[in-house]
Image: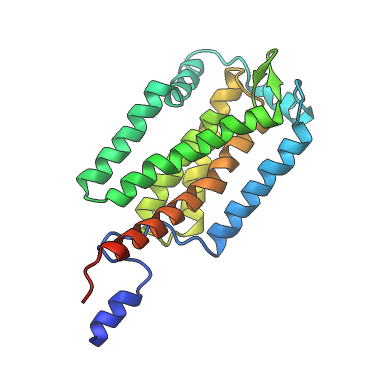
Length: 227
């Protein structure tokens, strides 16, 4: 093997088929994902079975709930992104862009990296059992998990596998905060529900990208011709 070939094979960025790696799950990203998962667990244990806002939830709800137009229109617009039609269109657009750029691995990540946090949030609602407005399960917020996951997918894909902490977290936080505001303003969730939703995405989406990388590399290795 030539020196040039050895350098290309050992490089962490590109994969064997030339597509950039999705996520290098170590350092700050691995630590942040772990802390986010811990926060979801701790809050879930603390809020299990409750049906009323806590002190912090109450203060935020008093400040945000019941916004008037045009802010209410903005809140409804954000909320619609997490509904089945809006979510399908948004994720579909990301997947289409990935396929046009000939990045099938990224397209898989766009689907699984968004779907997994939403599924996890749905399951956690039944486990935690926190309710709002009667018997409506609220913890964590699936809408917030969804939009945070979409933002994380886009930020991680743009970073090319080795993201810088501040830009990725800023994009995820901005998207999560926007949806969190909409959910509290519309009375669909408590603030802590939305915090847990964003953290659910932060815990699962990067790990999903890492798993997609590992799976794709393994399949590529099996299908590669033997010399």
